[in-house]
Image 1 (cartoon, rainbow, N blue to C red):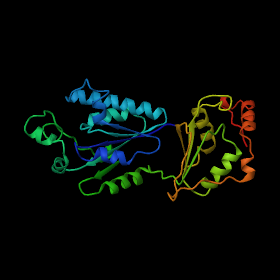
Image 2: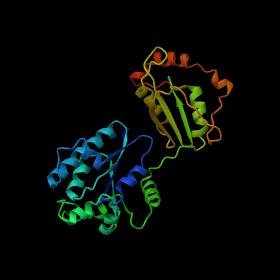
Image 3: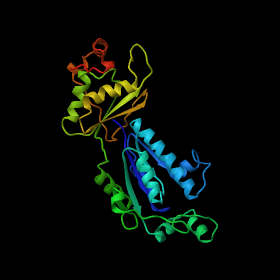
Image 4: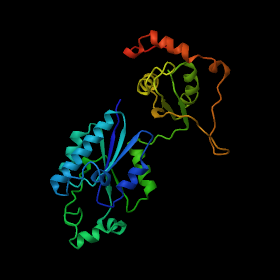
Length: 285
């Protein structure tokens, strides 16, 4: 299982970053052009060659994150067709979304005054003014959104719908899952088998006698069981000491039937250890 990359590209101030922030999910990393320019790529300028190197590095980071099972939303100008081809070669599962807005609209949105500086010649090689932006052909892209005419909400909804991205959970189950056992599955299945979107949140606990499996190992065990459920996702969260729920905030705590509460996690762990589970065999219920 690996992650995927959504690559938003378009003119400066076309709305790429705004849309990217609206697409962030529970297991998603946002790669932004400005941020990488100020961190990883401070040694690069704005020549065509440096722009391509900037994007090559960004694509490498995206692929590395995908391989670690993170989804990536990238927002870069990416003005040249050759650069988009380079990214497609570097990132195994990438979908390009063209964020289309006329240059005059982008200029109106430009609170930093970059377009004005470029027109005065104070900024050289500025995309849309004195550096080209190669409009993509239809076969190059997965989707086009027009931010001059469509609202942020409508554009995000279109991306989510067309790319089948949005995962709106109605149930979040937080636990150690050391390991997943019949009691856990009874609770989770009560939602998952009724079509509810479920997130199984795995506490990243330190290894001990009571917590012998790493969070990554527990995630694999859970995905062995729920990997074919389209409405179940997993995520690893920092170790949780307390989960507090305020009054009348709209959340509820699942009550556990007595026969489920009596199921022993310790006994289940002993059975798992005997089954050579960590070598790839899966212990059935």
